[in-house]
Image (cartoon, rainbow, N blue to C red; front, side, top):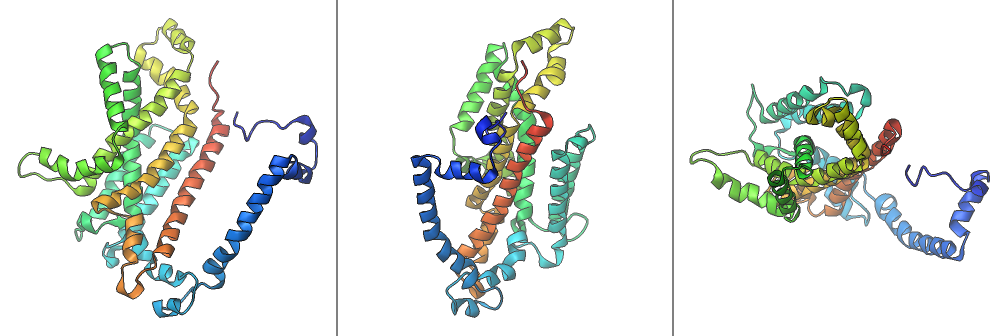
Length: 359
């Protein structure tokens, strides 16, 4: 049971809503002081922000129209929105990355819906991802090199591929860390601690500088693919620790009872332990997925034009020079929609599955 779901004291549970609100805001001297400070901060911040974003803003026109006013230039966002989404992808072929966005969102929506949790969903992941890659690359038509990819399709593609790869690897790594085999346990601990002790930026530089030197002479690998491989290996370590927390929350009696019924180790993990453990760590996995989505913005340091880098580049257009605030706010809104939606989904799924630790 979460704090938000905890029952209220009897005195408050049967009182009017306005009385509970007043008690929360002014019920104690400390609450009253915090309420007053919050109201003062909002009175100081909201009026100028409202003037800049709405009252003095320019919603249509050119950069000259924006320069004549002191507010935000939302005309810039309208003019460069397609660049935000697709970056340098050829404009005549924008239907391809648009279709990639729809396919990935549909795949994520199906994966998030319990009634679609069937065996057929597993092969759908590699099939949809391969189709998205072919669409972005311009297979069977005009080829498009990966240095022209960018925007929201790249962000969603990297996020989906890396998290989908890291989750099954993390399950195996978490099981290895709890294994009775000392050598296997030591290797898993070394891998997890090494990856968690290295910044993601360093991992990206390894993908750009070190990984190409490890390939056989005369062979090369796409930059985006190299980044996906290294980022997936990096996030596997973090996901493994979340999964291990769920495994430790399952009482030993569950596994002992399965062994008494004649189930082997892998069948016990598959049918008894892992379903309960993954249900327990739903909040942790969703939180990690949201953090991973936000971390994809670091792809900009190796020259991959994800959503954030595309927005930053749009403000270097000589016709719309310098509107970085509007670009970053638009991208922040997109990230907020995904992050807030993920957090609400986590709460809904917890209630749907009843994510409580077995006794």
